[in-house]
Image (cartoon, rainbow, N blue to C red; front, side, top):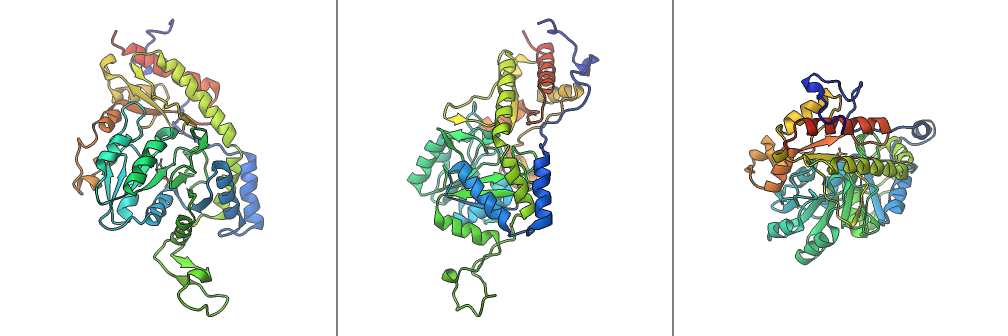
Length: 402
Ligand SMILES: *Cc1c(COP(=O)(O)O)cnc(C)c1O
């Protein structure tokens, strides 16, 4: 503990790092560049063979029967809600500790998001709170695998079965994680992925919905592309000729390009490597921060073999003279640039104007006051990791209450 009382940079000490590090960054190699270039030279730019190849790859990775690639994780959530039959007057239960899209997808369908509180230790939606929130109007549950740790799938499935609800897993963080030995992606009625650049695997933008049910799969295909079908079996009229198609529902243009699909396919080849490195970094962080009474380490459930997308640093306010805001600023002065995931969704003015108010989910609100997201991504070097640990330790010890 030689460095125990070292001065933080914000107090005039030397910063833990020379250069800034951010909370997330994509990793693109030459194979990725070649995969994209090949599409540009030889393939259809959209609706081509790379879409099917990606969908097949997501199925073989997760064990899901069907996958529908689409333009973003948000689009994936929207068509999943539509396929679940979510509509005007319905309620959809979700967590406030997530990106806004997990609740917005219910609003897109004319339904009302209902927020259920989180487990204070795992930070994932608490199945007991979900069950308490169920009403006659509930149609679906959107459960977010926050930070990449799987939600409690079995209890959630049981609640959904009992009340006739569709379980949609917002798996934007979860790619690479297994629950009870099986990959998330095949475990809920539908699971959505996001391929935004901060996520573990990227396509620039992109998303997908995975399901084991053929009836849901067919609906997802329709909603992805305008509600248009070329399947004669689904048409109301006799085809006029080979050019003929019909719009039989109202869908969207949520298609992914083959350029994105090629990049995601190439990125998925690196998923085992991405997973391994993320696990190493998380283990190193947990080991270092678990020793400090000023910090609380997120509880891991034994069922989840987690590929972590976000590393959440949580302060113990009773053990520090500073709050989260000052901790965040002190880290920035060390050149460790963090972020905060997430502002509870119902804090946003748009939600406030719909009648949501603070106090709804006390565990989520308390979490929000105490967290920040540390750098976590594949390309971090061991020196990067150690400099983050040095910065965090310096600040926690310096401002710690004995
Ligand atoms: C990123 C994210 C989304 C949205 O994904 P996009 O691809 O950016 O539309 C939805 N839910 C969660 C939890 C996310 O982190």
